[in-house]
Length: 373
Ligand code: FES
Ligand SMILES: [Fe+2]
Image 1 (cartoon, protein in one colour):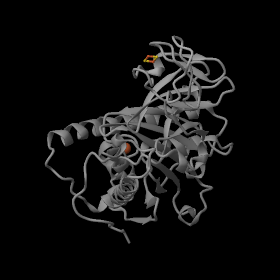
Image 2 (cartoon, rainbow, N blue to C red):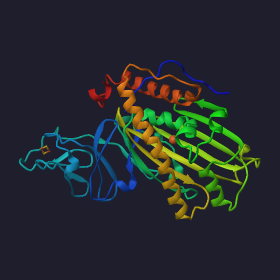
Image 3 (spheres, protein in one colour):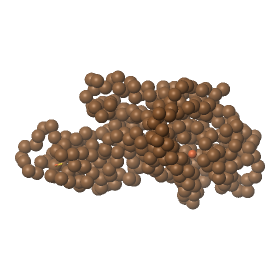
Image 4 (tube, protein in one colour):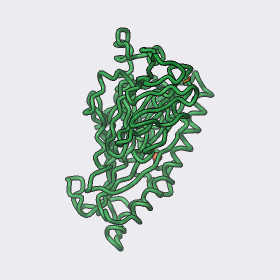
C-alpha cells in the first residue's frame, strides 16, 4: 500500500544541509595542473590536484583581500598562489609565503574542505570537518564497477535542488514530459510502495504485461535482437540523503519472473543521479546511465548517454520554468498529491538534517554565520 507520508504545506526554495558530502565535479574535470572554480552549497571553491594527483578544495577567496584563488596559479607540489598580491597557500589552506614581507601572519589561511575521490566523482564535505566521515559518501558503486558500463553528464540547472529531487522521486511525470521516449500511461495507473528510514527513501513501482515504450524497446532489441511482445517494467527509486538518487530501471519479457528476481530475459539500467545545491536557486545535477549488458559496446554507451541527455533536457526545461513560477508566486504553497509521497519523505529527512544542524551550530566554530542563517 502506498505510504502517503507527511501531509500539509510544503516549503519551497529549501535550504540545504552543510554537513554532507556533495559532488563538486567529475574526476576528469579536476585537472592535474589547472584550477576549477565551483560553488557547492553556497561555498565558492577552488578545486585542483596536487602533483601526486590528490584532489584539493580550498575556499575560493584569499585571506588578504578575498581575490579568487581560482584565478591564480598552482605552485610547487601542492600549493596555489593568489593572483592579486601573490600570497601562497598549501593544500591545507595555510599561507606559506607573503612576497612583500618576511614574517607570515599566523592567522593567514583559507578553509581547506575535506575531499574524497570516489565513484568517478570528487566529493566535498561542506560542513564541520571534524564530522566528515568517508563512510557517509552515498553508494554509487555502479559508476566504477566492472559489471556495469555507461556514462553521463552534468546539468547546470537553474532551480532549487529540491525541485530536482521531487522530479526524480515521482516518475509519473514521464507520461507527460517524456511521452516520446519513456512515457506511457501505465506509469500513472500502477500502484507504488514507499519505504524510508533516517537517511533513505525507496519508491518501488512495477508495471505488468505492458508494451515497452520506445526507449526500452530499443534496449530490449539491443540485447535480444528482433524482440516483440509485452514486458514487465520496473522503477525502483532509492534516495540517499541529502542529494543522491539511484533508480533501478528496466523491462523484461512479460511473465519471465522479473518481479521475483529473475531478470535474465530483460535489460537493466541504473540511472545514477546526484544533485549538489549551488545556492537556493540553482544546482549542479550530475547523472549517468549505467547498464549491465553489452558492456563492451561503446556505441551503446554513447547512444544511451545521448538518449538520456535528450530526455533530461525535457526535465531541465520544466524545472527552470517551475523555478521562475515559484519566484513569481512567493505566497503560493505547494500542494501534495499521492504521487508526491516519496518526495515528501525526502523533504522531511532534509528538514530534519537542516534543523539538527541549526540547533547544534551555536558552539561549533566550523560553522559560519552564513551557514546557519
Ligand atoms: S588578495 Fe590575495 S594576496 Fe592580496
Ligand atoms: Fe524526467
